[in-house]
Each structure stands twice: as C-alpha cells, then as structure tokens.
Length: 615
Ligand code: ADP
Ligand code: MG
Image (cartoon, rainbow, N blue to C red; front, side, top):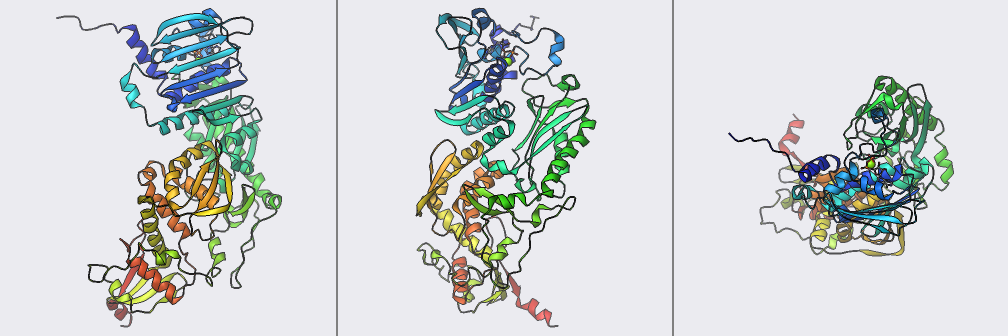
C-alpha cells in the first residue's frame, strides 16, 4: 500500500494560512492600516478600487522600512513587534503575529514602496503570490505605500466567494470607521473609485465620532466617564430618543481596539430600561481600558470577541456609568429646547387638546412625554413629539382637503361591474357615505355595513400608483424653486445611492454634490406637507433597518412607505364627495382588501350580525 501522506507545497500552505487572516478586502485594509498606525503615522490614505477586488492601496507617512526589513516583512512570522512570548498578551500594539504581510502576499499581487527618514533612497518590492519578482532602489517620500492588486487571483474559490461590490465596500467602510474611532489624532481618508468617502481630520474623540457618523449625531451624544481599579470607561452614549431600530451605531473598544461584547451590550441596554421605544437600540461609543493581562484576545486575528477576566465586576460599573450619563441629561432636558430657538409649532385647531411638555427628573424620566427638537440642515424640526402628535393636525387640513390629483389619474378607472370584482363595490356607488370618528368610512353594501379605514384605503391606492410609476419608469416630479441640500453619514450615503433610481420614479430628483452631500432638485407632487429631506432620511433609515428583505422588495417597500406617509391620515374629516372618490379609487385597485403590509383595509358587518344585535 502506497503512503498517502504528502507535504503540501509551500505555496498552497501559504494560501491556506492566508485564508485565516485575510477573508475579504476589508481584512487587507485592517491589517495594512494597523501596520501604518504602528509605524507612527499621522496621515493615512486608503484608495480602493471595485470594493478592493481590483486594488487596495494604503499610504502612510510613518517610519518606513530599510531594504532588509522591507524584504523581511513578507516572511511568515516576521515581526518587529514581539520580542518575547509574554508580549503576546499585551494588546498595546495592534498586529502582533507577523503574518499579515506574508498572508496578503500569498494571495495577491503586492507592490511595496518605502523609505525611512534617515535613508536617502527608498525601496520597491514586487511580490506575486509569495514570489518576489523584483526589488530595487527608488526615490520615495518618507513612509510606506502598499498596493495590493487582484486579491485571491490565485485562489478562485475564494474570489468567487466574495460578495457584491456594495457589500464588500460596506465591510471596508465598517473597518475604516472602527479604526477611525480609536485614532482621532490621525488624518485618515478613504477613497473608493476615486471618490472621497471619508476624510477625517485630527481632532478629539467626540469630533471624530461626529466625523464618522455624521453631524446629526452631535447633539445626541452624552459623555460618560469613570475610573475604577478594574476598568476605566469613557466615551459617549446616545440620547434615548436617538435610538433607532437598526443596529450599527454600537461600538465597544477595549484598549483602543474594536470589540464585540454581547454581555456588556446588555449592561448598556439595561441602563436605558424604560427609556427606549420598543425594538430600538441605543447608540453608543464606549471605550474601556483594562490591564492587557486581564483580557484574553482570541489569538485569531480577525475575531473581535474578547474575554475579560473581570467581566462580572465590569458589568455593573458599565451600567452605572451609562445610567449616570443619561441621568445628567434628563435632569436638564430644557437645554436642547433653548439652544435652538425657532421651534416650529404647528397651528392648532380650537378643539385640540394641548399637552404641556413635561419635564421629569430621574428616575421617572421618560423621553416620550416631552417634545424635543432636532436641527437638520439649519432648520429646526420637531422630533419625538408626543406619540399622538399627528392629532395636533386634526381637522387642520380638512377645510382645504381634497382627494389628491390621482382622482383624475388616467391609470385609475373603475372596474366594469360585470367583472368578478369585489362584491362590496357593486353597490357602493349608489350609497351614501358616513364618516366615523374621522377615521372610518361607513357605507351600506349588499351583505351589510362596510367599514373602510380611510388611511389604509388611501395608502393602498397610492401604493399601487407609486409602484406603477416605478415599474413603468415614469417620472412625475415637481421642480423645487430652491433646491435643498443635505448631508448623510457614509453608511447612509451608500444606502441612499442604492435607492436613488427608484426614488427618481417616485418624484425625488436627487443629485450628489460631494462625498456625502446631496441636493434635492425635485419632489413628488403630493407630499402633503411632508418635508422632503426628513422624508428621505426616514426612507434611508427604514431601508437600512430592513436589510436584505427590504432590498428584495425595494420598489414595493418604497412605494408603501411613501404611500403611508402621504396618504390621508386618520383624523382627517372628509366630505361626502371625497369619501366617494376614495372608495371608487379603492375598488379600482388590484387588491382593495389589504395594504401591502397586510393591514386590513375594510371589513363588512354582516346584516345578520346587525340583526343579532337587536335580539
Ligand atoms: P506584524 O504587524 O504582526 O508585525 P505584519 O506582517 O503585519 O506583522 O508586518 C510585518 C512587519 O513589517 C512589521 O512588524 C513591521 O516591522 C513592518 N511593517 C509593516 N507595515 C509597515 C508600515 N506601514 N510601516 C513600517 N513598517 C511596517
Ligand atoms: Mg500587522
């Protein structure tokens, strides 16, 4: 029987090892940028092409390397950072395995240019799949530039396994954001296909977080700080009402390194208890500092889970400091009122019950009973008003309210009555209509009494109209006299870019001004007092909360969201003609019974049941 054990050729062994460290373009960026930071750089520039699949280049102004070091750096287990096994337990420097460059060189085409301050000439090395192709002297600025091309070119399975560019780029951005938040003193920039995505100037931690997450977060950050014998905790937590459904603004760092920590996450959430709307997650940026020897960094370089020796002790400290941060805030809630001055107060009709915003002190503080404001693009909008704020507008629009233009929309015609259509519709046309509680339309039909939810009915009607506009690529837009500009954070920018085309068919004419800046040139013709920018921000939030499911049904989701926003609301009184129009349009819909989300639009109270009421 022949021997069956064979030694793998080096090249294959290298590729397998590389797979552990480098899983996707984002891992290359993490390793290269961490090396650049370790080299004492103050400015790091990342250039990415095609989400890193074509190329990734990281340039720094750090120490640079000598000829020999440059060559050595690509050897497996070559590192200048470990002198004894004990060092392994210290997390002070970031990379420590001496494997990153060797791994990258095994599965890509790499070009390194580097020069030390004290050397007159620099070095250039080209490596293809672990093979050094050339090394030569060149003139180069001080520091290091590493160019990584065609990642996984020699490992087709791995390359095939990479996700769509938008997804891979999201990983890259996430990695860059995590690094950025622990290096506020660094000038860090990221370009994708020549477009600037991040350009962060040196500043303090708060400025850095705002730089990364977008200006909107600035007024929502509350600082926390505590120092004990087991841990020092600092950073920021978001105001309760800033909590959103999407996760993605939760950041823990330990000894200046990003980590995931579900157990500590629960401590933070616990501190918010009673303050959050259901299913929302608070934002936080929390930096823990502990003795490096008291944590076990999983030696796997790409893992972000970390085991703490003093987990149990840290939990209550963390919870208390977050609580304290929130408490400070609730004790002085009027601050954000006063600062912003021009709060827009809706005109109230006489019969509206006016709620006085209440100011509660800890521990009864509840963010949902007070009115806050937020500043968007220089204008102040109401935010987190009492939950029933829409009722403030009750009857407000009703005088002038007409059923919007789609009444005369050529698309919507009555279904001929001989088609097997909704039984109810056959009789409604001659019926009279009655409005119940400014919310339901009541009319009699053959089998009994039909009740229609006016908001859901109009949502269904508009949904079908908007969807048909998107699907038929029909643009109906109203030019804005004064185009509005707005700013998003980088992650939201990516989401919005994916939506831009469909939004165009809904009537939003959007153009990109700069990296994360947009201008609204046109809007849908029937926005019903909705502020276009706020609406777009809502759509973006909704889309990023929706994740993959959302993308699959992008057009439907968009149409439904817009429809729900612009439809007649509950509480609006309608004239008989308006009710009739609405009912007619409803029964011209493909599916008058349910909204896209499955909400019941109408119900019929059977005559028999009515009769029973009198027994
Ligand atoms: P590690 O970072 O774990 O030491 P790497 O493979 O990432 O291992 O890097 C190997 C060595 O190459 C580093 O220890 C460092 O000496 C050198 N090196 C890598 N990148 C840079 C850089 N941008 N500037 C200066 N030296 C670098
Ligand atoms: Mg390294």
